[in-house]
Image (cartoon, rainbow, N blue to C red):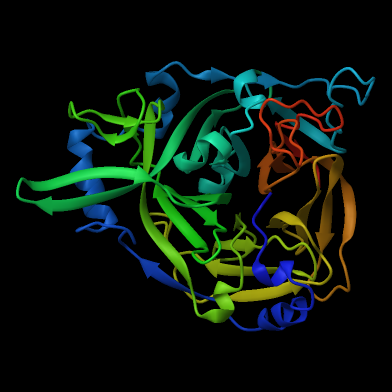
Length: 411
């Protein structure tokens, strides 16, 4: 679940939030870490590159080291609850394609998947590669966030590899320059892929905004415990094989924008100039959306830090993802906790309220728009692993399903 903004959690503040949607939101560019560092992100990554053997192309992440294998879902588990095992997840309506993670990731309560984007977002091509964001919690909370690089087609079992997101930094001391990385301190939400840049929505209270990663700068590290440079000169990443360092940031600027939580982000290609569509998770009131136009895909950055459009989707709540269709409709994924199926909803600007299009699975999250063979497909995913309010990793709750499926539906 995306983090809810303070204004949404407190009764009576929703009206102020909706009024604020009429004003443009502003972002502040940031090229260097907020923590200790003598250098910018770019210089720190350039300093790390020779120490880590140079970057690994995205397409080789799944071949240089053994990849994990997901299971293509051809038949959704039937809904039942006989009292001896957890209730299976709700089958989404209008289902096109689906897969479930390898068992270790399907049942792991220490990580929750949140965002999804595909090569259609990146360059308009068919979605042969999917990227999925996860945030660490419980025992993995100090590890920050990761993405999964997934090789996908409509007929076979997908393969994937996890990549840890990190913050690079550099220090100067009597020994000269020292380059290292630490965990990315963010609550990773929705993600959007544009050119070679990956945008990650950070809903952390007080530091909300967009974090940017260069997918041409993935690095192989020595597999082992700990994070960063070790005493023997090798670099570790909590047992992961790969790291992806942050290269830039856009922080919420001004009181109105800081009150807008960057919960999700998607790529909008429906207008002449591509843009990022950002939406927020709210428990009550109305979800707000904003669009920031993008520059050339060769650079991948925003063309302006001022939003070009913003609106409140009247009475739409618990929104986990939002995309804009070619017909001007906005498709919204709306969740309903750990036991009830989510909804795919549609909304048009100016409407009193949106309408339900179909059911999604339990714990539905981000949305990503794509075309597969001329057909529109909306990608989403479920986040729960038999989770309940207790959050005890060893406790089985027979009322709550495992909903760790990744799937596409017809709008």
